[in-house]
Structures are given as structure tokens and as C-alpha cells.
Length: 151
Image (cartoon, rainbow, N blue to C red; front, side, top):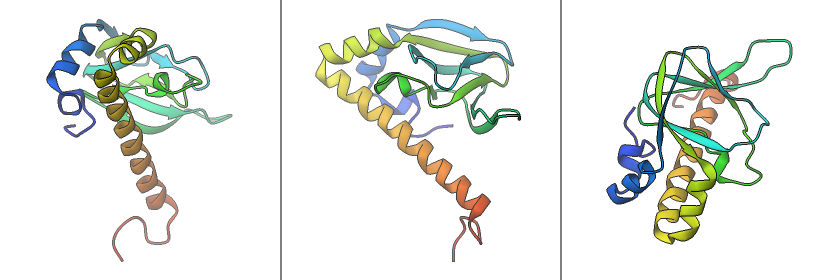
């Protein structure tokens, strides 16, 4: 997916480089849970290869997939906003290679450099807005009398 929310287009090159300086490479096998809803959000990832599903716990049922993420996309935004707890869960749907970031280190860099911090805040805010919009469209498709299509 190429959009204003992928790292390649969301951040100016100098801020992208500063962020990637804090990254460590990691990988997940298909089926690995990255995080669980309600737990402490102390890190986040940017997908290099593979697919990750964001999901919700549904008592007595399988997790309900909310969205699938791919190359260049941010996994997790809860690390950026207090109380720093995950609002969803995430699972690798295929083998995944990603850059992993320590949330506290990134927040410290944001506090130290206001311009960098603003870029990160705008990026994370765009991710949240895009995902809320996508969820709204899916809800309209499911529950509106005529879906989310035109009149």
C-alpha cells in the first residue's frame, strides 16, 4: 500500500532517517501474536515484508480481524498516546520482517526535537484518522441499508 501513512511518504527524509536510526530488525512467524488488546504499548513496528492483521477479542469466538497491514505501514499507534495501552491486538498473517522501535526512546527523541516530534505526531495522527475512516466505511458496508456506496 502506498499512502500518506506509509513511512516512505509520511515523514520527511531527515526525520525518517532519525527514526530508523532507533530501529532494530526483527521477524515474526505466521501466527505470532505481536500484542494483545489492553496490554502496555511499549514498542511499535514498521512492516518491511509480510502482512499483519489488527484484530479485536470477541468472547467465545476467534479474534475479529479489523484491518490488514503491509509494507511500510505502522503497526501500533497506542504507544504514542497515554495511557499507552493497546486498543487492538495484532497477529502476523504471513512471515513478517519489520523494524521494531522502543516507544520510550522515540517519545524521548520527540520531546528533545520539536520538529521531529511534530512530524511523528502528524504521521501517527494520520494513521489513526485513516484507520478510523476505513472502519467507518466497513461499518457502513455491514450495517447501512445500502452500504457505503453512492445515493
